[in-house]
Image (cartoon, rainbow, N blue to C red; front, side, top):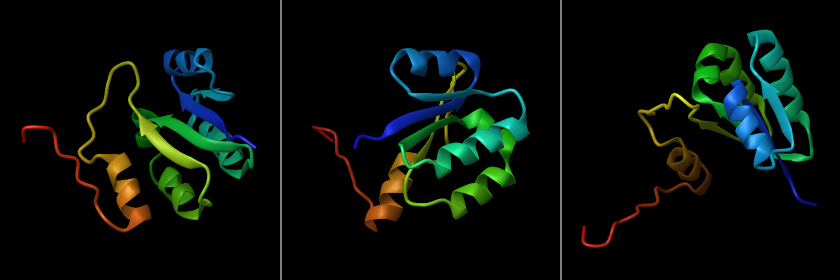
Length: 112
C-alpha cells in the first residue's frame, strides 16, 4: 500500500501541491479548523507525509508542538515555506534524520 500526502497551508501553497498530486489538502482559515484537520491527518492510516507551512505552525503554537509529541511514527510532518518564503534557523529535515538515525549525516561539496 502506498501512502498519501496531505498539505495544510495558504490557498496558493495548497493549490500548487494539489495540482502536483497531493491527495488531502486543507486551506488555512482558522486555528481551530487547522488543528482539527491536522488531527484527522495524523490519525489516518493512509497518510504518510503531512506538509504544513512554517507560518501556520507559528500560528498554531503550543497546540502544534503538543500534537507532534503525541503522534505516531507516521505520518512524517515536515514544515515547508509558503510563497513568501521562510528561512529556518535550523535545518529541520537534518534534525529529523539526526533524531531518527541517532547520528548527524554530513554532506561535503566537491572541492570543499
